[in-house]
Image (cartoon, rainbow, N blue to C red; front, side, top):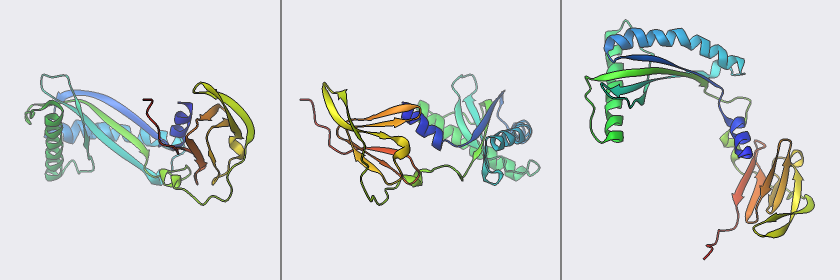
Length: 224
């Protein structure tokens, strides 16, 4: 779990989010005024939070959503909403309103098996997230593609106990594994804040983004 957490931290987008209670019937006027005002009052603060985390101001996007529910019920469903409309343009507001209602009704039928009344929808809360749309100084998933391997990695001989037996293996210092390195399990990878044990039947490599990628190399056999 430590490895997955560290990997997730390395790839996760920079983000800031807020949720604000509304608890009012959904209507054209609510969308045009209250929801639009909540966006205007919150977006700038979230943008500054993300910039403070290190995001490039040119690569920031906002994602707004409404948590909607049928009047008289408690189960709310999240529906994305595009607030790029002009609040003074009745046609744009009406179009956005219709899109949200349709999306909610479709989700309601999918989740609960029956259609919602489009004229009886309540807004439980408004959600706004601001994040960096494009990673510029972090490894991305595209960096996980294999690269040409020049020489397999050679580690220090050691052993560990696994699956009821002692296993001879190699031990590597993570800092010494450059992009392009590969090795077969069993192996031990010593990182600054954790130890990764690679079981027999697995192999590892370091990709172009300097991420450790583990892959099952031997097909699992049934215990029977």
